[in-house]
Image (cartoon, rainbow, N blue to C red; front, side, top):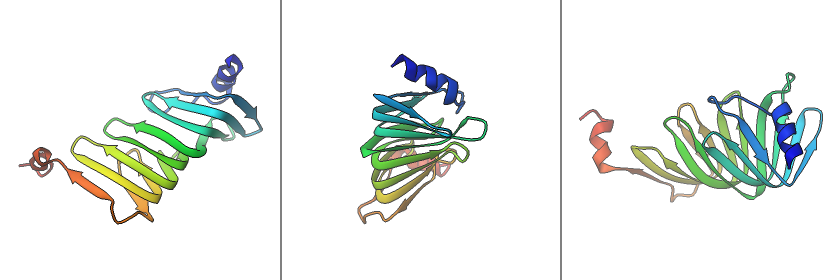
Length: 159
């Protein structure tokens, strides 16, 4: 377990919103530009986290984290940014560090814990832009719902 943290500090340390990525897993397999964390993988960055069967971290030419993907029966997660907070599950979660976008694939479900809008969304593929808070759902069921709290409605329109 200690070797995992040493490898993580040397290879996968990434500044993201002033945070450090930490991954714990049962097994670590390091390649040239890829590090695989296999078995009960837990990833955390600041207050964001995810749990998966496997997390693959891909490195760029400077050995900095370019992207990661979490794969498992169901990957559970909670992603937090200054104004946005999403919690849910999917079969696969991919995060691109350069664009700050999550791509959730395979029976993806999220709850948006935004202060003024409550959303419960489901689909085959969901894309979350963490900078803007925009969410795109592909192949979602008709039952996707968007909730607006009535007491926030006036504030949203400047009333």
